[in-house]
Amino acid sequence: MTENQITRRRFLKALGAATVLGGQALSAAPGPSPADKPNIIFIMADDLGYGDLGCYGQKVIRTPHIDRMATGGTRFTQCYAGSTVCAPSRSVLMTGLHTGHTTVRGNAGKSGRVPLRASDVTVAEVLKAAGFATGITGKWGLGEPNTTGVPNRQGFDEWLGYLNQRNAHSYYPPYLWRNQTKTQLAGNVGGKKTEYSHDMFTAFALEFIRSHKGEPFFLYLPYTIPHAKYEIPSTAPYTDRPWKRNEKVHAAMVTRMDGDVGKIMALLKELGLDEQTVVFFCSDNGAANRWEGRFDSSGPLRGRKRDMYEGGIRTPMIVRWPGKVPAGVTNTNAVWYFADFLPTAAALAGAKAPADIDGINVLPVLLGKETALPDRFLYWEFFERGYQQAVRWRNWKAIRPAPGKPLELYDLLADPGEKSNVAGKNPAVVAKIEAYLKTARTESSEWTPRPTAKRDGK
Image 1 (spheres, rainbow, N blue to C red):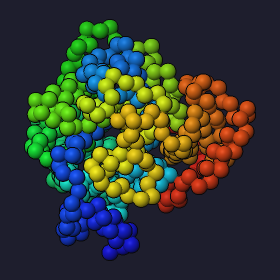
Image 2: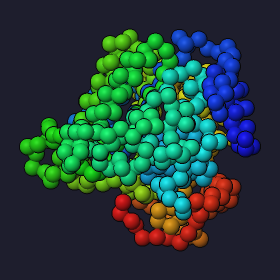
Image 3: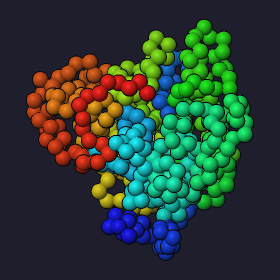
């Protein structure tokens, strides 16, 4: 057993709940009763822009159920994804470590797809050890078949979906993974398109909730909508609009997902779980297409997916928990990101989060007991265009577009669209962020800084 595995075993044992590691059961210890532990549902869209929801300013695409979720909960305007692309953003969410520390820092490393390590401790493992049933359906992106990164080896009891984010581009795939078994979809063989994966994920989610209604559960629902390619059984209710086909499909995808979020919320009420369940809704990164003049998917923000500007990393975030999370509130002060989910979920479960993670427990803010968070740095790095870094500190946002280049600096309070680089006017701020950057990251053999590359268009 490696030193990392020993540390992981000790951590999980310290949580004081039954779990299995390396085939050996760890004994349970007293903790909060199941009634004191809320169910946790984390719904994450794929490439949904900051401005794609009605409650965030969308005027064309219909999202009544998600808008109603915002009315019944708190809408955050300064929440950030883990990265500006898929896999690293999910790695940050699962591990509580930002992209300068987490294992998966890009969609592909030097050796190809990089899985989570056996020594990584995920939010699913923390919650499973605290007595939660754990399930995931949708797109994983953190481990290929037979690696240490597959969901069932990272704390999830039940799993249906895509392991590989490239395979997730098709909504009519020939197979999906159910736990560690490749399951063929007969309705999609030979070019047929009768089994729409998104609908299967919703069906899994509803059944998981029904099956575990008598115990605390964690459901992670990383939908693939509205990521391209643009496939959908029907473009309703936009079929008759005088738009391009992909515009109709994009809008229909978002509205279809909205309807499925409505089904989940309705089921919680039907089962009497509404007040026992905290639901998060967000996107994994910024909009892949800004759809300017049609949907304006990035809203007032600069950039989109694969950019370190706000349009690439800021996400809509809605949190709903009736009677606990304030309803009808918009929080414009709390600056937080995906790394905070693990310690927050641990706090909800009455469990310990791993030490030495980058995230913090933001539960006091979610519950409305605080409006802002402690002064700290948030960090991102990105490798698909060479090597870029970004930092959020207070109202300041810094971006290094390439190694050796000077920092760009933006005052997001005065300039949320990042139109004016004020680095020259604020040398003390730049110096403070430069000092932080010297210790912000650890080296990775899979991801090392290199000169700027051309945009790959993926």
